[in-house]
Image: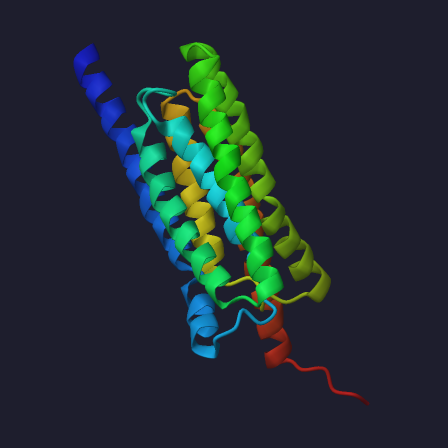
Length: 233
């Protein structure tokens, strides 16, 4: 097999992994819709927190900037998925601010301004003071730190499932989409030989595997309890 054919197959496989990651990520971006339907229907944010969407927006913006060709050539699929993600997170944050009570509204608006100020500072520093290789390292380390910090949520869910011995608060579809997205981008990063992609998504894949294993274990355990309920003597 010629090097040209091998190179073409390699490129097709990496692009396929990136496209798959985009598709699974889109499913994740749609997952908060039921929550915001409730917020709009009730005209209140109730006890919901807007911080996951603020963190999500900053994460998507940093990773979007990392995927831009001026920072990292050849990984445009990272930019596309995070541009879509940033748009979703901005819409969710805007709706949350619109329906929040005044103190929370002002607080969330302040956080939103801080997100764009932080992102603007990252863009300014990386373009003004850093050459191309250093720029990629600078933004790459920031994107890894941002992605790893986002894994706090799965860890909290895993802890809750173990503590309560129930998968009630860990929807299977969400866990599966998270696992598949992380796996797809892990493969994409490996094929692109980019540690700033495959390391955080490798961690995400591992956590996703744990979530699915816990789901299978506790789901089976709950079904066994239904079949053989404990009877008090």
